[in-house]
Amino acid sequence: MTYRDRRTGNRRPHELPHYQALLDDTDWASLATVRGTGESLPTALARIINDDPAVRAAATDNALREVTHQNTIYEATVPVALYVAAILNHPAVAADDFGHDADAPPHRPTLVRLLEWLGDTAYDADDECVAIGERHFGEGFLDEDRDVHAFRDLRPAIFSAVHPLLSHDNADVRDTALVAAIPLAEHPDLTTHRADLINHARRQLATSTDRHHRDRVLDAMKAWGYNTSTLENADDIAARERYARLKAERDSRWAADGTGGYSEDPPF
Image (cartoon, rainbow, N blue to C red):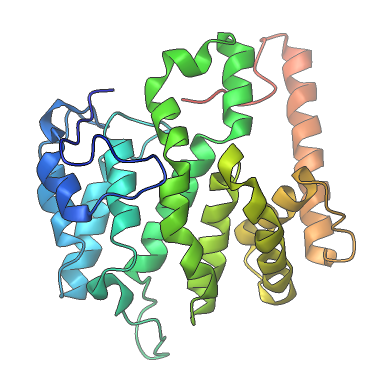
């Protein structure tokens, strides 16, 4: 990866750079994105903290679109993720409207959208994705994919910005922050936070009806050795049974076709 941060090059991995330093000191034009290189990213990223909500929304779409495609971690993904983490507590982002007017179209606050992207990106570089990569491409997968490796190394810094939002006044922010924190907490230096995340998970499962959030939280609790039987509701059980049935049908189809299809999707 060719990311360079001159001011913060000697910082400790757990420290999050200032967002302006990331904009000024990153060689964006040298970093690969979905459609080329990242020379347009500084302008789009800077607009995410604009005072105008419409400008923030458009800039968020434009910036994240450059590093979001087919679960891939690009060269530009790491500095973008650091920047996104660094602005989570920026006044313009923190002051967004978290209410909902029944007479107005649904509004997704910038803070929630940024947390969603951080969580999705963290899952694209989580332990399961690495294990799949190693099964398909060999044990040197992480050595070859330096961008995934770089993102994983910086999980503590990103987590430091996400963690305070677990106690946010808005339930959507809290729930989305938890889903983002879970894959970040796979880092060896963050395992001590898992007990706290479990407490947040129990509270979320008691109130949330979001299928995606519940699946992520339940999967994490099971992976960490917690019994979730008393926390699952009828919809959770039905979803789990449906996923198992669809996977069995897919595996059976591939076996019958003899096409040699993967039993799991390799990372892209």
